[in-house]
Image 1 (cartoon, rainbow, N blue to C red):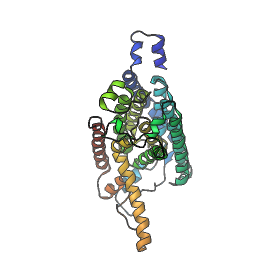
Image 2: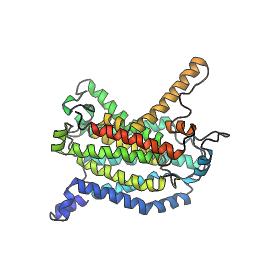
Image 3: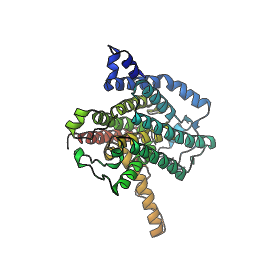
Image 4: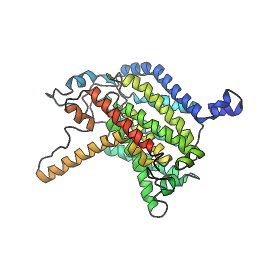
Amino acid sequence: MLYQLSEQFPFAPWSLLRYVTVRAGGALVTALLLSWWLGPRLIEWLRDLKFRQDFRPKDAQKPGDATGAADDQAKRGTPTMGGILIVLTLDLSVLLWARWNPLVILALVVLLVFAGLGFYDDWKKVSKQNADGVSSNFKLIVQFGVAIAAVAYLWRLPSGSALVTQLHLPFFPAKSALLVGGAATGVALILAAVTIVGASNAVNLTDGMDGLAIGCTIICTFVFLVLSYVAGNVELAKYLLVPKVTGAGELTVVCAALIGASLGFWWYNCHPASVFMGDTGSLAIGGVLGVIAVAIHQPLTLLLAGGVFVVEALSVMIQVGWFKYTRIRFGEGRRVFLMSPLHHHFRKKQWSETKVVTRFYIAAILCAVLALSTLKIR
């Protein structure tokens, strides 16, 4: 919206709005201020509607286990579905500051659909006051349906087929792209869809302690803010040997808005949390990060930047897989971790919640630095 204003008034200060860096900064600040203004009102509204977590979550401590029992009791009754705040402020900021193009539209559509899926899951939980929600199969069907549609949309863009048929490796220059054309195209398309679904579920699994998922989101999104800006700038992309993507610069505004919305939500979600994001926020955040990664040729870099999310998801897969295997092999299921996802393992080891979250932040920062180093190590 404001970009169109700069075209109508091509003189200072409106002309500054032509710069993506200015609009990205504006989107971040706008999302943050909107979050601070809307946050208390939304939390009160959720309380009035009784959209709160009065039930014990699936990963809650067992009766008689003192580890985290006080924390679990204190969190019961906390409003959930706070992801509405993130999605709403992000959308409004992008509508105001971004220059609309197919990549921006795709990112927002995926964000809204995944948020709707998460909202439905959260609503089923709070309405029945149990942790069941919608089935995992239903979630995966919807997620893969959306992801495949997103990949097909990118593939059919005039200059977009390469976005999902070329695989660019971290630490290697753009000319080293793999899976180009032929039978490999199908593999690349599947990988792109898996990236979107995997990112959505990985963030969802990480959302289990106050401030954990949202703090790691901010760190990971900063990496993609930089990568999107570089991919959208002809000179920087050429200098840093990364693929140039038409329209990717506007994804910088989306990333900045996500950072601002996340900072605002973090204000209310830090320990002790006044609101939980729920699946409404976590599924949407992961989905939009996955789409941005695919849209700028960086799905494998997302594995580095979102290392904490990846490890959290792997811990669940390893735990479930090993338990099922040992139950078949030995007649009794065995565990690798005391509890999964991984953050609960450390909570079981008597680490305080704030210590677990802070150390995971440190790990997320190290992952972000590693991901950013791929820009120079090519």
